[in-house]
Image (tube, rainbow, N blue to C red; front, top):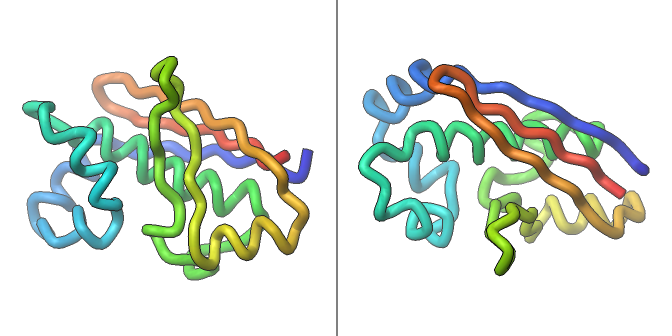
Amino acid sequence: MFGLGIDAVDIERFRSLLERRPQLRQRLFTPAELDSLADKNDDAASLAARFAVREATMKAMGVGLGAFDFHDVSVAKADTGAPHLVLTGRAHALATSHGIAGWHVSITHTDSVAMAVVAAL
């Protein structure tokens, strides 16, 4: 294993941020992610979890904010419904340079907190 990252996001705080700055949806999340949540009445918990994935991915790679763009990491679902990471751009280049060949991701949330764990293999 190359690294392990974990992150937690307060859902209400994240919801308030999205309400104050609606343009953040497009800045932080890919069109595919936003489309996948279009049928939800309230997507704040799911978006908070996806944001936690980005932070956990940075931690798993041992880098900080700014090492890659937020759109360079996204969450897609496998046919089984399990989440998996999609890396592009600088995130993909960084992972390749570190010899990272695969990823595991786990996402969960309660009514108040969204969390993600990412393992870089």
